[in-house]
Amino acid sequence: MHALLVEDDDRMARALGTALAQRGHTVRRVGRALDALRHVHEAEFVLLDLGLPDLDGLELLRRLRTVCDAPLIVVTARCEERDIVQGLRAGADDYVVKPFRMAELMARIDTVRRRTDSHPGRAGAHPAHPADVTGAGGRPVRTGDVEVDLAGRTVTVAGAEVRLTRREFDVLAFLAARPGEVHSREVILDRIWGDAFLTASRSLDVHVAGIRAKTGRSHLVRTVRGFGYQLGSPTAPADGDGPR
Ligand code: CA
Image 1 (tube, rainbow, N blue to C red):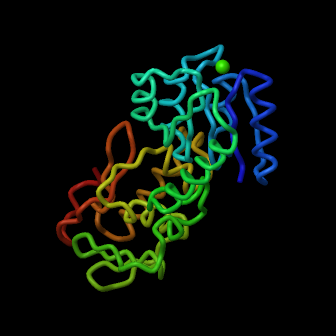
Image 2 (cartoon, helix red, strand yellow):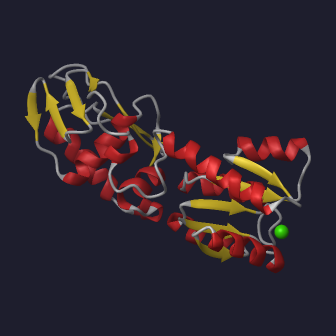
């Protein structure tokens, strides 16, 4: 897997890089927060040192989490309980205090990856298809009179099949896979387009508009203004009262 190693200490970075490479991972090492943000979209997991020269590590962690939900382990000298709790709250999957035993860190990486892989929302860093994300083969997701079959990649509205483009289906399936959650634009773009930094583009909006128009259910996708989207509850065939 491809690791992003965020570590400003050269010796530590070399040791970690070697250990990761020995276990078959490819590694991009960066020493600054800015570069971490630039390269995080390619990472399948992240090791993050909190003491960086250009930005507080917890702040970086929060920013990384807005654009990426790959497994992330904090590796830091900060060992106060308060730091650990803050790190985990900010979205770290695990927290390893320096000095640590390399074998233990590698084991923790495996554990976190297993855990996040089995989490429905987190199947690897860049699953091309939400069907992979959901652990396909489950029952279709129903909301109102709309049924989304993630495994079969079909959508029916009031029993009639609606033809979406591949991307439109990917977006709808991603939302349907976790109907109770609101998904940020960045996460959706990262998962479906493989690039969270497309966030300024109109691609996502255009696809959402397509889903609404083709299904005739403007409330099937709910806009969470300034943040992202969620699977909505289309109430009736006559819910043509505007897309938002
Ligand atoms: Ca450091």
